[in-house]
Amino acid sequence: MSKPFEVIISDGQSALQLKRVAQALRGIPKGYEKAVSRAMNRAATAGRAAAVATIRNEYTLKASTIRRHFTIEKASVGSLEALVIGKGAMLPLVQYKTRPKTDTTGNARKPVRVQVKRRGGAKRLGNSFVFKGKILQRLGTKSLPVKEAYGPAIPLIASNDEISGNVRNVMQETFVERIDHEAAYAINEFIKKKRG
Image (tube, rainbow, N blue to C red):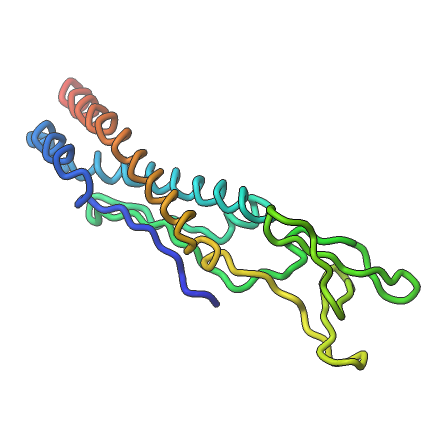
């Protein structure tokens, strides 16, 4: 398993804006915490979407495959921290763009071609074949032993400076956009409870 990739957004960011929100919500019990945690959760969701889109632009993986490897630990009133975590082991090469998709054993022998990154073309993978939906590689000149071929793991891909920087920027921008809206929502929620 690869080292997890984490992006954390905590209330230490946008200090001036947070002071203003705290001032506006000072009379509302847990108002500041609710607004900040909601904004952080929105930012984390946007960060995961940005990670999926950015990785999808660079690599030939399906969005569902990428998204499955990201989890969000949501912020709460008691814990003002939201995390986007990418976990997972190396991915089988068959999840990237490969040709052919059908078995290449027996009389149907064809060279296996794999394209991991979108830039560049498919490369021939030597001593390999497709069998029962897996790409297997021979370890020597004999028929056996064989092993399944793997590509890079999602945390390794996501730890790329360009991708992680993009995710952090999207999360920060979303947090800044959402905090004022969530503060207004907390105020309206408090007024509705007061009335009735």
